[in-house]
Length: 80
Image (tube, rainbow, N blue to C red; front, side, top):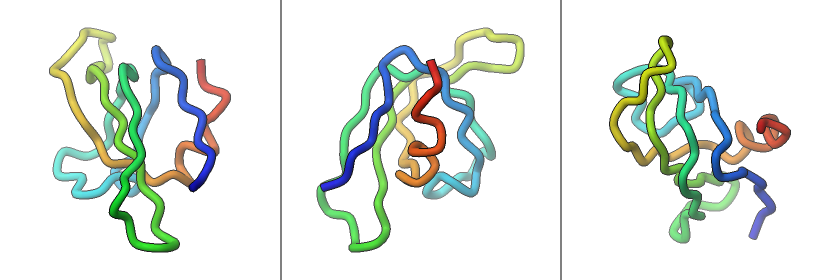
């Protein structure tokens, strides 16, 4: 198991390279839920981030579930 701290209500800027299957590029997400991926390969740690997409104008978009690399979230653990 690994330690990832993502606060509910945090706003994350997630680059396409840090996502699995990033068909629509980078995403800004207001976090409403987090869950670990149980069936992940060793040395390839991922986490599901659930939330509301935010557009550049800060307008709210649709609800989304995004599979994100844990290493990306460790670097942003101080985001509020």
